[in-house]
Every structure is written in structure tokens, then in C-alpha cells.
Image (cartoon, rainbow, N blue to C red):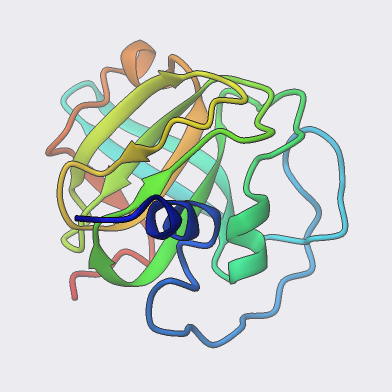
Amino acid sequence: MVSVATVLALTLCPQEARAGESPRASDDAPLSGRANEIRFERSELTIATARGAHRFRVELALRPEQQRQGLQHRPFLAEDAGMLFVYDQPGPISMWMLNTLIPLDMIFIGANGRIVNIAERTRPKSLVTIPSAGPALAVLEVLGGTSARLGIRPGERVIHPLLVER
């Protein structure tokens, strides 16, 4: 049985709960909301769906402090923006919405780049954990309702240089 402390540790610091990842340099300002001390690298990502390709400008949450911060305290997020959390190894991932002011869609992505599951329109400021439905390597957070609006579904492919099959 998993303890509450373990769940909170995985949720608060999911990267630190796994094998250590070497720090990566980043010096770009956030694409959304307000600026803060933690900086995120920027990148582009594509989701290939039955309706076509959908491109997003994403901030990369690669280091533990970036993953702890995530999209907290941001008052808005552009429709074509998001944050990509990438981990060293696939495994169960749990997220939450502590201090997140806007609803998000959380798209859990497997090691093969395919969408494992989607948590749509998550509730702002909630402490409820939101788990992957299976082993995941990454999570893409986008504005709540984006998955439904664009027809994004489990099984579809997410294309990004950090999401190469492992």
C-alpha cells in the first residue's frame, strides 16, 4: 500500500522521487501568466491527431525545481501554449493543482510518444492527485478544454525531441 507521504512526495517532487536527472540550463521567461524566478526553456511540440497536426509552444519542466513550480500562480495560458514535464524513466506519474489558478488538461505520454490518458479540465487549487493510467514518461499541461476542442485522444502521437522511444 502506498502511504500518503509517498503520494505527496511524488506529487510535490515527482522528479526527485525518481532517479536523479542532471540539471539543464534554461534562461527563457514563461510563455504565460506572470514571470517568476524559475526560468524555463522553450520548445515546440506537435500532437498528431485524426483531425490533423496541432502545434504548441511549450515550456520545459525538466529540473525538480521547475517541476515543483509548474504552472502555479499563472493567471492565464494561451490556447497554443503549455508545459511539458519530462522524466528520466517511464513510470506512474501523479500531479495535482495546488496553487494553479486555471483549469488544465493533463496529457500523460508514454515512452513511445503515445498519449496514455488525459485528465480534462482539472480543478484549480485542488489537492486531489491526478494519476497516469499506466507508465508515462511525460505530462503535457495545456489550457483546460483544449483536448476536447482539438479532438486529442489517448493513443495519438506527441512529437517532440525529448519524447523518443526508450
